[in-house]
Amino acid sequence: MSVYELHHDYPATSTPSRWRQVWSVLWRIPVFLIALSLALVLFFKFAGPFGSFTMLERQIDGVKVQRDYVPLSKISPNLVRAVIAAEDSRFCKHQGFDLEAIQKAIDEKTQRGYLRGASTLSQQAAKNVFLWNGGGWIRKGAESWFTLLGETMWTKRRIMEIYLNQAEWGDGLFGAEAAAQARFGVSASALTPWQAAMLAAVLPSPNKWRVDPPGPYVQQRARQIMGRMNTVGGEGLDRCVLG
Image (cartoon, rainbow, N blue to C red; front, side, top):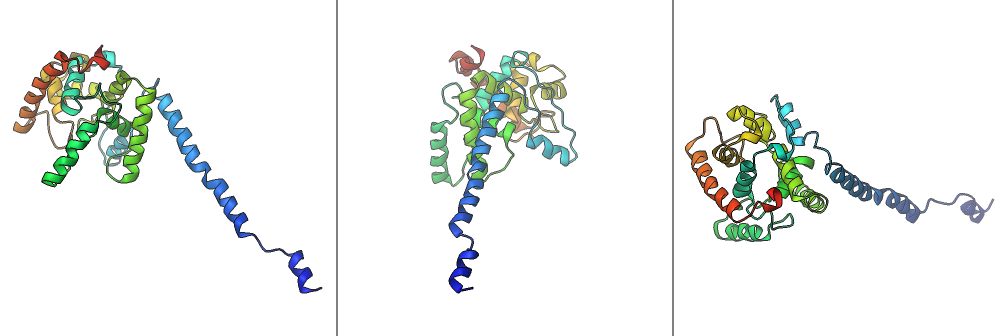
């Protein structure tokens, strides 16, 4: 048999063909992830989230996790105003990202070398449901994607309900109901303005700052939040949630 015949009887594997096979698999991965994220956000439009990565992390650390999911109608309007006052005064005005707060954070970083948080309640709700704590561009990118989906598929009222039921208040307490019961012995619907302000005061660092007993910093921050709550209610900054 000639060399020519041998070559045609046993052709070598084509490199372009291998790449086509690899590509036929790779392009399906982002499509699957996008479809899955859309399905999850749509599902949670009607159903309460089952848990979170943060809850799982606390359980792995040996902390007993407590959470009772309740509808927003069973959470005091005082707590709604308190978290808007403390965390995101433009919640009803932005579409998930507060560009003004981001610009201020960048300016402070330039002037003082310190980057403060500029996450909205929408971003925090997305993170608390779908993602984990920590930084990194991949996580922030995923947070932005889920925030965009949440703002598109959920109402502001739904975002607030999910946020208040997923937020961590320290000692394994997640959600407004568990926090209100453990800290003040009342249901979330019965929180007074001061109690709501106290809970909102520790949100940036719930495992560091305490409500029972509150330190001087927490008490001072709670008083500031109380003042802002009056502004939130008076200027209708809570209208997209409370009507």
